[in-house]
Figure (tube, rainbow, N blue to C red):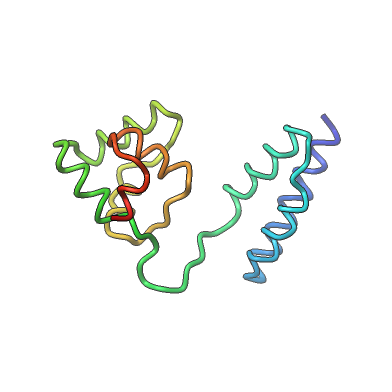
Length: 130
């Protein structure tokens, strides 16, 4: 347990420093080298990436799927809150406000969020990119 806490603290410090320097690319290169066999360490790396890495994108639109998410949601007569609630049943926590920001393309979408949207809206992931 002490070992994992130490690794967690090191990851947190490293990610914080990387974010302040705005070099997330280098962080991801290092993480790829750290794809360890230990499932607990993999979880820690993933956990701290999600918590501390900003979603840095230089252009205005932060995703490619927002308009399609809105269209599919409205076709199913589903509110943003209902979509958020259904995603929560898959342990994907996106609040209503974040759904709105995804749809207006001012927020990025993670791979797991895209997977959840695909399941809830009943379409293959490729459909979001058509």
